[in-house]
Image 1 (tube, rainbow, N blue to C red):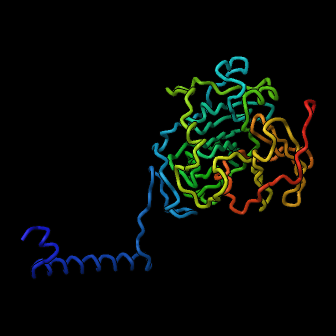
Image 2: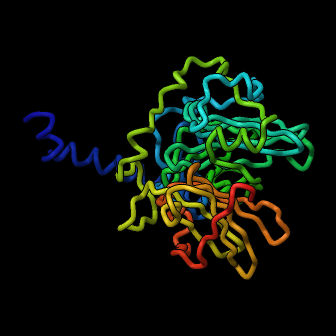
Image 3: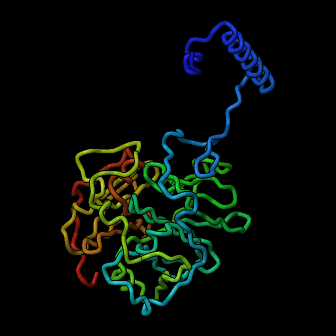
Length: 344
């Protein structure tokens, strides 16, 4: 009788040994249940070195993105150059732009593709500028703590709804970029405050902010910032990772301008506007008047309140906006956009 046969058809002595082992295991389990107040011991679940046992979402919805923790290296207080020295940038190259405390900075997506997080300072205010190339979402957060300390973020190598999960270096909690909320760890349930950030072209940003600084390619990391590893992905209807909600019948990578007021969200597909020109829409969302400025040439847009203050909004792939806002309204041309003349 072989070893495998012995397992399948144990003889009397083997059966007694198996019963003894089983009774011992049951006894140890009963002791553990008694010691822990009737609750079985649950081992901590980890991915990429992060403890996921204290989480807001199902474990099955957190996915490895491929690179390990910090395999996509965040930048902290990197070097910037003057706009006139940004010789590698063309007018139609895309950048994230942030204007804060009298300082304007541009973060080329060619660099952000390889780093995804920049822990930066605008004056003395800590700001985290983040980008998820899988969702085409650039979001800036205030990163100052109430006690005056600075929150520093890294790239976990994990995804939720195909969107980057950041982690804070202080507590190693995981934060959903689009939801702006910690989904695991000691800070679970806490939210981050977003600030307006443009996802536009270098030509448009520089025209609006000629004094802008530009994130330098001198990052101390050997990367080919001229190569876009997501170029084919941006055109393909396929997603690389699962998402909770998905609406079919529309290209998932179509660009939308998303805005949320309270519990009401609306997406403005950029395809709903003419292919060229600049347009204004006077609309209402959540019983509040809003004004949208759409630049069809730069495939971007901004949203303002009734006082003319810019609101946080999001240029995103349609699938990314929808999976985080499945209740979203969808703009279908009413109210009609009004052309903005060259002087507007």
